[in-house]
Length: 218
Image (cartoon, rainbow, N blue to C red; front, side, top):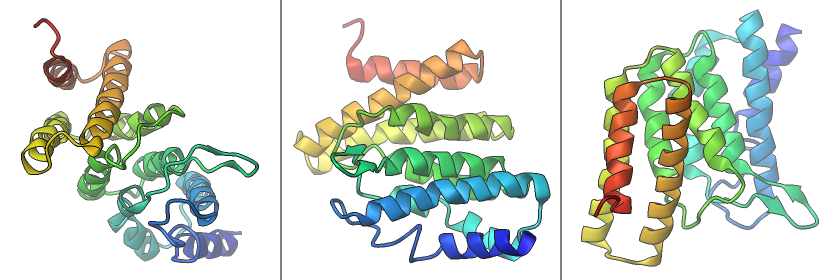
């Protein structure tokens, strides 16, 4: 019922589920957070058809949607003897579904892009195809006719972080994991855009930045 949908949404988006002990890197709380993200995505997909969730509750959620990917620090994929955590991929699914919701206002997109810009700087390199889920966020924004110029700015800022990190911290381990992870994300995004003939200016920006940081043609 619509009441059950509302109850589930209000409960699972709270501090005891989606944000339970967020920031932990090795605890089992990641399973609660990660599968709460999938459940909320399912609830939003259903509400996109029914449009029964209260607008004021949705707006509160939309305002802080970028918070999950930003704060989540447990980047494990498959955890031996326990199963899939995969919180980054599930967080990407949640962000993508949120953007597709008919009541989502694009004024909240910058907070998602800010989280997406920093999600590749979590002291690890993704190895479970997280990039393929993360690029769906950009694709969802393009489907909503989000400004290509704003997405170009997002890409440029993501690569500006390389220079900024080198100036402030130098060539440390975090730089190399962040650089590799960001490049993997951008290369995946580039080929997705190219194969689907989308956003040619955005393609060109990504190509130029990737070529620069891989030192292609030198």
